[in-house]
Length: 274
Image (cartoon, rainbow, N blue to C red; front, side, top):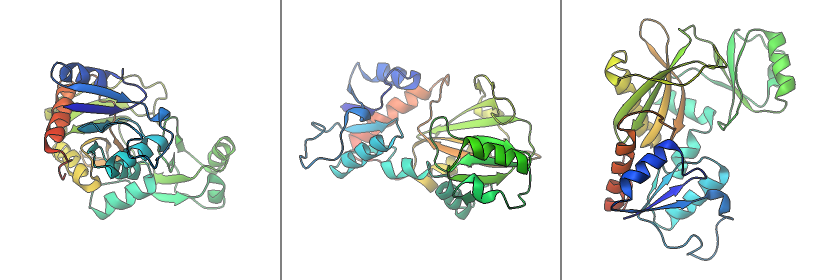
């Protein structure tokens, strides 16, 4: 089997470990989305198709490349549409709530300045509408804080969520083809220097949380994804973010699950329905 990795970082620990498992029997090829110049009239613009591609990148170029490969008939995990969907926090919240998931109520604004005259229910959490590296995620205590943040992030489309009191620890739940992995990490809202995620056996999660993570995949069409959850009180989960193809660092069994998913998808010649 030929397995393509759409990524500018093939040395990422999860990808590197999965590649080591695959290469004795399969050919793993790296496709850097930064080297692809856009869809071409030539059907072979990215060469001969691999049997499956793993999309470990979220840039516009990477999504465009993934869509191009899908149009040519190649299976891509996760699909470009699903990956793009969870990068829009407005669309993410809307779909999650419609599906009955316990997701933080989310309001969208074109920029912070449009909120200055409003009496928001402080404290609130403000995030960039479009998820990306080094985006805006901040707790805002009052109107003065909102104005100060607006000076740093002028013109940034945002979403606003009411701050939910919690322990200050995020539960990071990751899913790869139906296998749940978990860790806890200090929330960036509570501790900017929060340190690494600490592995947590899924069996030590509060009741129902692993099942909740598994519900997310079919809703968004994702096979490899992360769900950030906080305890909203009494073990009640509240989802505050979802992301496609996260790092899943330091999780025993994660590279094996990813390698198995790649081979299974390649053998089928299509991404199975979630």
